[in-house]
Image (cartoon, rainbow, N blue to C red; front, side, top):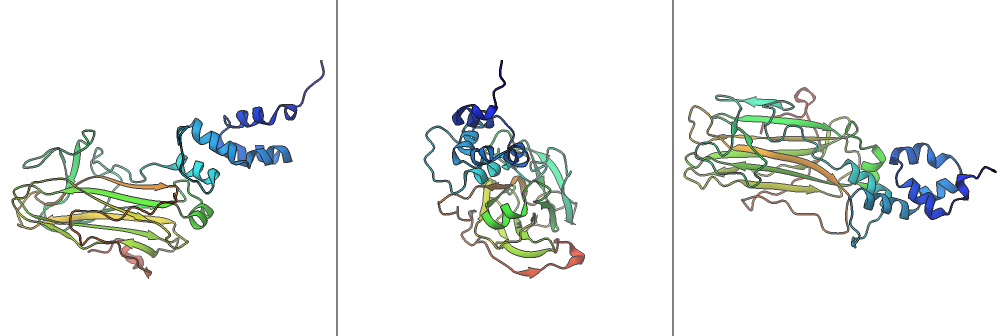
Length: 287
């Protein structure tokens, strides 16, 4: 029996075979085999099929996509880049920048004079004390799988979220700072709204803070996420803001306007900076 080359298969069959091959093998190995494979792997059809197969889109998807290959990779990388966002591992993965009063603490929901979190899967929260408590994470985007061309050329949307609440019987002040930072620690864009102060005898309601970075300068290699606060009564113990369910998620840029920053007070808005951070502070200067 004569041997038959795989290239004699109909192109549609070859495309179907390629949808089952891991994306990095397609680009690093398969694409180099021959001009036919190269041309097939470069087709929009292949990457759209891979997106459909892996559940990134549905059959009735109707939103325009500028580059399906990039869309696929961004979808495959999409996840919360913050570790231990809901205090399930105590203070693991967080750098303690300020540990005032009786220090940071982890408590279980709803907590004394507290309310249930909107998502029942969230069981714990971080809570601050009577002097400033700040903690942070510095995300290395290249270590998380995002390469330079992807970040600089396509500049995917970077959405950050945080949730905070006060105890009903004590006022508090909440702070958040998120900065997009270069390789040499230059701040290229920043979301640093004014502190939020909640009065004593409040409803202890959980509030979401969100901001989407879009069309930011090229050169972003790290993301600094820092938050915290303190109580306003100066009571011993843990009466400051409660914080949980924080996230940084990178998504493909769609042809829609980016979501605006949201939080309880109308004064919280994003700010952009172009300043070098003090190297001795490694991005963790106090508010």
